[in-house]
Image (cartoon, rainbow, N blue to C red; front, side, top):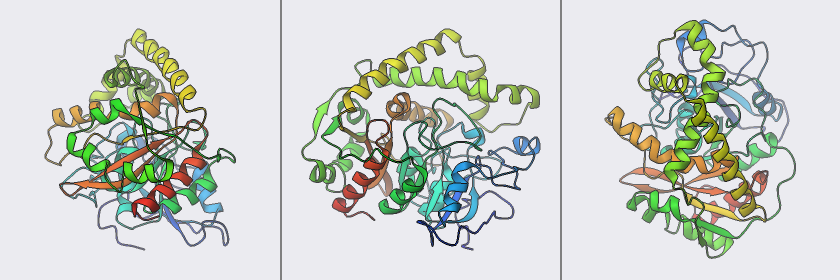
Length: 397
C-alpha cells in the first residue's frame, strides 16, 4: 500500500478490495470519494455527524462495482468537503489534502482527496462527483485530467446526493488514455461519432485572469486543440453574462441541496466547518421564486447549447479563471474565487454537458486546466478527442 503522503484518504484503516481477475482495467488501481458506498463501510460524506447517524453500506455503489468488475483494485476512500458542498477542498474534521501540484494552495473541492490521490501517484483512477465543478476544479488545481460526464450517463446508485438534477459521477486520471479506459467501463455505449469544429467561448476567456488566458493559449493548450480540430471560431454563448449563469445555477441547486439534505440537517443539527454552515443556511432560506427562475433559466441554456453542439461542435475555454487560491486566502477571498469560477462551471452544469479538464499549463508554479465540452451523450468521443489533444500537447496520453 502506497504511503498517503498528501492526506488524500479518509482517516482510519484504508478500504481495500481486489478487482476481478480479468478485465479491461486489470492491473490498475482506483480510489473513491467518500460519498460512494463500499459494502461493509460507513460512508462518511466528509462529516463526523453524518458518519455517526448512518449505518454501514450493505453493497457497493454502482460505479464502484463496475470498476471492480473490470479488474481494477480499490485502494481507499478519499476525503471530500462536507456533504460535497464546497469548491476549495477544505475539511476541518479530516484535514485538507495537500495539493501535490501546488502545496501552498488548496486542492479544490469537493472531490479534493480523489484529485490529490491521482496527482500524488497513489492510484491510477479516482472517482469523484461533480455538481457545480467538483471534479473539473480540483483537476485544474492539482494538474490532472478530470471528466464531468453528461448528466445521467453514469449511475449514481449508492452515492450520497447533493443536487440530484445536477449531480454527476466523474473521475480523475494522470493520463488521458486511462481517463478514457475508465470511461469505456462506466459510460453507456455510443456517443463516439467524430467531433468538430472547435468553438472558443468568448465570455469564459474574458472571465479568466490575463495570465491564465495567456498560458492556456500556448502550445500545450488551445494551439494543441487547434492542431487536432483546426482553427477555433469565437462564439458568444452567454449574452446574459456569466454572473447570471452563476446566480441561476446557485439558486436552482441550493433548493435541491436543501430538499435532499435539509431534513437530515434539521434532525441532526450537525457541526459544520467554515463556509459549509453558511451555504446550508442560504439553501434553507432560498426564495422559491428565485429557484423557479433558476430552473427556467436552465431550460433556456439547455436549449441554446444543445442546439449549438448538436452537430458535434466542441467548446474550449479555461476550466477555472485562475490557479487554486492560496491556503492563506480569507473566506471572503475564497468566496470571490468561487463565484467567478462557478460562472464558468455553470455552462456545462446547467446544460448537462460532458466536460474534460486537461492539465496544460502552470502559472507561478501552480497548475491551470483547459476544458473541452461536447454535446450531451458525446462523452466517448470527447474522451477520444482529449487523448488526441493531450498527445499533440505533449501531455501524458
